[in-house]
Image 1 (cartoon, rainbow, N blue to C red):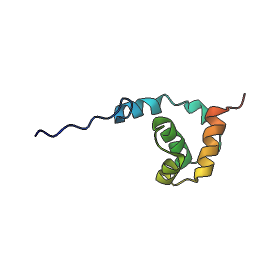
Image 2 (cartoon, one colour):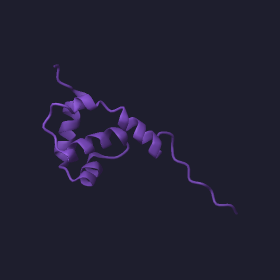
Image 3 (tube, helix red, strand yellow):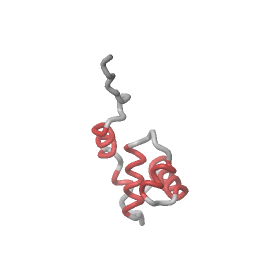
Image 4 (cartoon, rainbow, N blue to C red):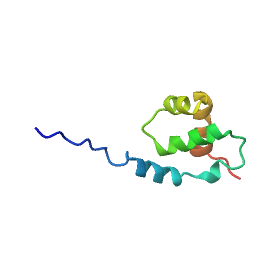
Length: 81
């Protein structure tokens, strides 16, 4: 019997995640007092929506509550400037 190749669902390969990450609104991150780890985690949230805030926060060494608050404040309810 031939082994079956594992296929990833559409949108879950590395190239697609990089493309989504590059289209993340980087302008939303400017002007805020964020650490490099927080910026990286926020971009990871946009690139890998299938992962939880806890997984991403643990990977980047940031607080889950802070990451979640930043995500909602910056991307879901952006302030008017």
